[in-house]
Length: 236
Length: 236
DNA sequence: TCATGTAAGTTGCAATACACTACTAACTAT
DNA sequence: ATAGTTAGTAGTGTATTGCAACTTACATGA
Image 1 (tube, rainbow over the protein chains, first blue to last red):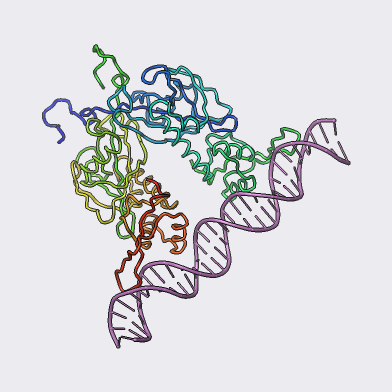
Image 2 (tube, chains in turn purple, orange, red, green; image 1 turned 180 degrees about the vertical axis):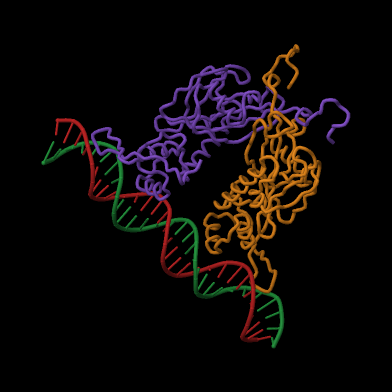
């Protein structure tokens, strides 16, 4: 089986078989006008030139130490940002997924960009960037490759997480009010939540703790208590 | 390294960059003695020769039309079985994961083999196969590569699914009694469930329906009604 | 044929989690 | 001081689940 017997150079399995064209795709989401939005790039090159797609890039085994690093590099190169909240979404691969190669494999990641930090700049091979309501992109048949279904999955998984109160603390600012937290969840879920249930669920689970003394005294009304994530319960 | 750069042909991105050594790993689980077990193979070749690992194989872009097909092919070649219940688990990749290649990527799948059909035969490059309680394998530091953490993840995800009553109908026989169904869930979860709650949860969600007329009249006691999955609610 | 044993399946109750509604609290501006 | 606005709380009914006790249906053997 293993042909180690006659050659000078050992033909490792890694060399014996052709490997798939492997890419990273990024479903970068954020919140704009109280809606979940996703970032699309207009493709500057073939295939699907001119069409909108998720930003992505080729996995570079000479540059990337692992998959997450690859995703961060792609984010930096294409968008000029770092992604604090980054989770693997799915791997999808088949022949005929991408005309550039006989077999194309993509590892898709999903991310949330904090509200303040939304300023990605179109980088290499991207003509323009735009934020699109995630539900629109999920239903848009004109999006390149199979990226529309990646968006669909990304939205579904993210909503599921929020529904279970698995909160994106990596994404949220260090301190926040409960009203802000709720607004964030509502935007992601796409529907309103009840204030009192929300709060009780949050503190039954001890997800957050008040920052002693700190209140947000913005306007002409009762100031809001600032909270921060609790170290203990919410691992990661 | 792909040595095609100086030729007349257009250097597509697929050819310009070296691609990772890409494999499929299978976390095949089943139930034995009322416990969740996972299938390990003893490696017949380096690296990690003699160690136990998840069965796996190289992705063959010439043979596999997509990732799932690749997983099925690997199952057939290595184990001699088909996997009715098959779901993607995770993709993991980095430099230094596998000494055979400068950069190794694995797409891991998890599967459940029906109780009856447990008879995988050691195939190519596997010296022996054994079923190990999944929790043991998840905690075993001697397992090759990062496969122990793949097992850990596989078990966690599967339990989570069962906890939500997302039942593995692809895995279950066509007809079953509720007692059997419950025993299956208990084995996977690793703890007992309350009979009446379990049944109420099941039929509030209309997950199954009785097969008219069919009862299992095994022993010297009340015969059990046979059930089958409901088409409507539980897609896939 | 009828009591007996065993597993299948049901019923009732308490505890919990949650949605909904209405309420109170704290601040600024006038 | 009062009005206005948002932060935060309390009470109540309903659905879901866990626990325990119960009934049902069969084969067996006296």
